[in-house]
Length: 97
Image 1 (cartoon, rainbow, N blue to C red):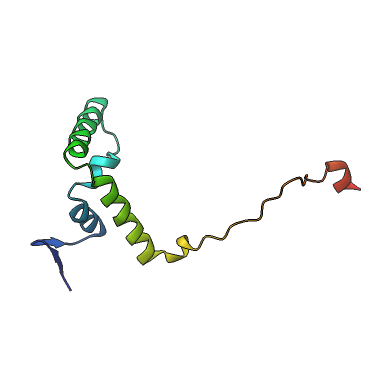
Image 2 (cartoon, helix red, strand yellow):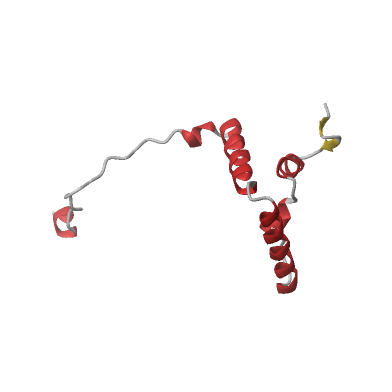
């Protein structure tokens, strides 16, 4: 089965993310072995994109939350831990006795 988004064929998970966000993932994460000049150019491009698309961080958060909810829903099952106020850990001497 083949998937298309806006006329583009999706062949990998990265394609889905890039098409959902409208920007390449490497722009935000960088690439291994990039030089300082390449990094600076990438960061300048990212700043320009954010200036032109102020809602992009919200879209990224929404895509990430939807992906987590779809593929790892147990990550949203948060159980509050009891607070241990006023309790101390036993001393080493008491534990050895």
